[in-house]
Image (tube, rainbow, N blue to C red; front, top):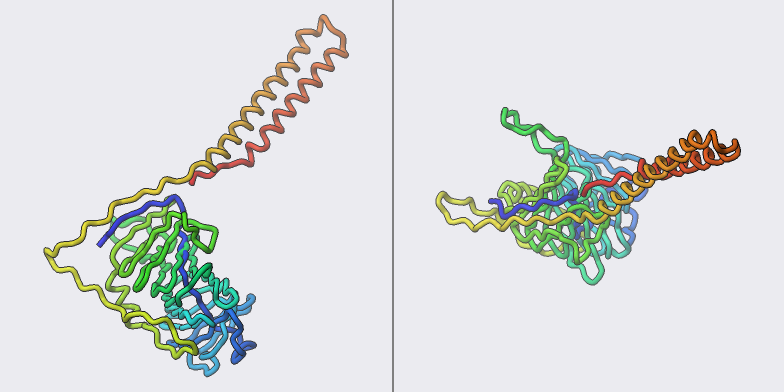
Length: 353
């Protein structure tokens, strides 16, 4: 049931307080886990791949080396159809479950697990995040969307929606739709951010328990919609719940509860009001003014230079050649200044937020 819609002039940035640990290469199999790393604690299905420093290694989930593998910063885990991988981040104990047909990047695992920065390139992931404190942070980014949490059980999807063959259907888009949903705690979701930590003053969307936020990136202005958590999502993760035996006690969270189906005629809560966040046009206005000033200066100098050059004809019968050459050179210099003023305008192209 929709609970509210927000439009943002940005691409969605999901900053989630989560830490991911992925399978390491054979060189680190069985090695002692360094601070700020992860360990594979469960795998089911067929096979998956680990990309480390540009080298790809494939593993069968039945390989005895898989359980206990170290996942290091910069590792990318890719799962195939029907394959799920669980990674526990050490030493804090957060647990990440990478679903089938997903690509997940452990791009930043800070010392002691205090700062975690993860990336969902495509697919689905669920995370149980250990309680953080102080300046600790746990974030997941997909595209330009960032989500951040503290002590939360949540999930994130970045999936291309199936094509609807109905004549009235919209033109299919190959841009993934991003969804962030919360089972326990809350998640802050920020559209467009270059940082991995959401500032306190940022206009983030807060996703609470049994809520989800979807971000449609197929248009120039992404549409962010908040609604109740779908039963299909809860059923999916209930059937594919955490199953690994972890070296560190994982965060304790309640069992997933499937929202009861709405009955006909039942009273439903009024949808939350639609909120529009006004874009910050200040950078655009500043750059656009600079471009206009450059064009204006180019027109002024060029016109003045041509006027000075043409005056040589008017004084041809009254002044000597030295005066005429002086006027011609002065006009040429002024025209040159006009062209030089035009150059910045060619390269200054303001973008509307």
